[in-house]
Length: 330
Image (cartoon, rainbow, N blue to C red):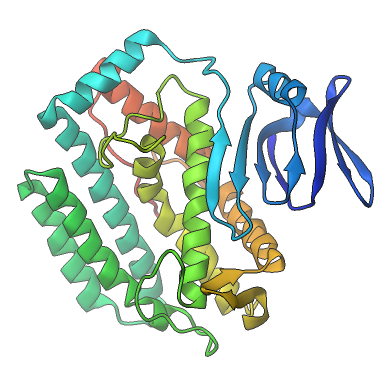
């Protein structure tokens, strides 16, 4: 089974015979290339053309994060599965506004329904979220009346604001309090976790899209414009509540991430390297969590569910098989 490799060390990553060699000031480490799915680089690494040619042959994406933990970009090798026909169908479903609206609405609806799943979980454990759940369900119902993408995104934003206000009831850690969503830079510890987790999710989805015939540059909820990729932003909306947010709640409620895992020396608050490693460990546990798929009658991981979600959109645009998003049964 292929896995993702996360590199925080500084040094050089290069091809050595038919494998990868990570060489740092401290040691050398060989990485069997056949076991690698994606490479995530957080440290200062030197790469060369021979390495990039090699990972392209092996169909490996490399994702780069800067010193502050922000996603910088990806080395996205030549698409080995892309089909001209599929790209044309993707574009058709984007350019035909009614077709685009159908997909975008289902993406938003599914993401919001997964927010409700999270709130119901904690509601069943003694936190009274009945009012918020009812309010969000009413907003989900109103999605059917939205006739513009901007209306969908506004409704989604309203629900997320309401959802974020629930965080302080969910997080039972006196050292962590959420006030309002802030991004670049995050202005409190919880925002730093949300921003880092969301970046991971966008990148995870991008790596999964690479393994399909879809083009990540053509999204439906997020406008296809100057941004390099948009389809991964769309699909991430579905999984952020049940993977990223759950990872945050678990880490804080178990006390595994503390105030010492944040750096306040910048114009904002960022996770330290130790904090990032802790988050990545929990994030990957969530991705590898196995559930019983309601339709396939088999066990699948959340990471596999992301790939299956991409396939469903692919079937929608190619085979006219109506897209129905994945709602967790947590």
